[in-house]
Amino acid sequence: PTIGENDIVHIFLSTEDPEAVDAFVRAAPSNWKVHVDQFFYEVLPYRAGFTTVNDTVPYNVMPRLSRDLKGKPGMWSLGSLLVAMEAKYFVLTTTSNWSRLMNELRKNIKDARCG
Image (cartoon, rainbow, N blue to C red; front, side):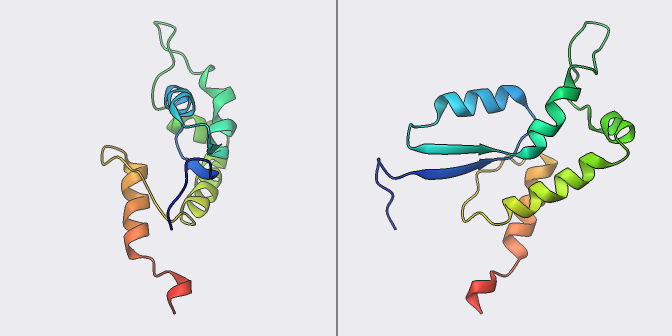
């Protein structure tokens, strides 16, 4: 089916990068309803607490965050993965382990509606 320029399009954005979320939301057409992954919101308050000597937030805070939160980010990730697997279409990057995992699952899971 063709999507008209006034049709609402729902987009699920799965990232932990605040700059990516900001750039994507700003660039999205007005008829796109962007749903940002709950994982992003769960992790966001903790990102500022992990600063380097230069007072900048390191890119990958997950190992320390997972340890400090006793594995909760792993559960959040599984929830995000389940939601992502409901999508019909994907835009992924091969430089992301998370994207590669989603792509392999996407390519190999049989759609239940197909019989």
